[in-house]
Length: 185
Image (cartoon, rainbow, N blue to C red):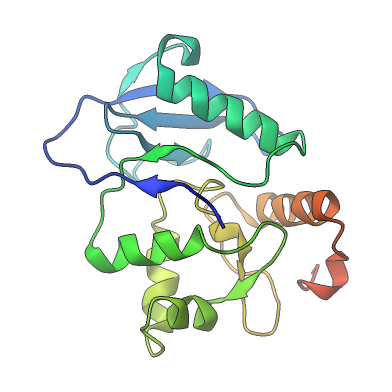
């Protein structure tokens, strides 16, 4: 279980963005004084406000630096949970869905229906999918761990190749067999 906890946003904070190279491409880490607002993929332009945030060097911002360090350790197979302050901005339902993502254990997957059950909304499967599509903090809140009911890979903001990479990486680190967790189509 992730110990990452969202911090509610009150006023519109000043946003800053640091860039990080990763095995799944360039990641843009958007931070505020409250925490991580977003981790964006190379092609993300409008999933969250702040893509025009002030560019910074990650070393110059404690939250950005911590995020880069933890993501680096994750990709190196040295970290299976994140401990970062989050500045999530979304509806009450979206934030609940995103928090549920943080409870999916490293190296495991869940279906959209299982995630809906986790938040006490068993009939909200489609709404869960829509909330996951707007998850602003990819990887840290691991929407890549949500797969179709039949185990197939489903949509992912970073693309299916990135989703497959992240799941395979986690399975290798955790020692789980890939074929038992998702359809590798």
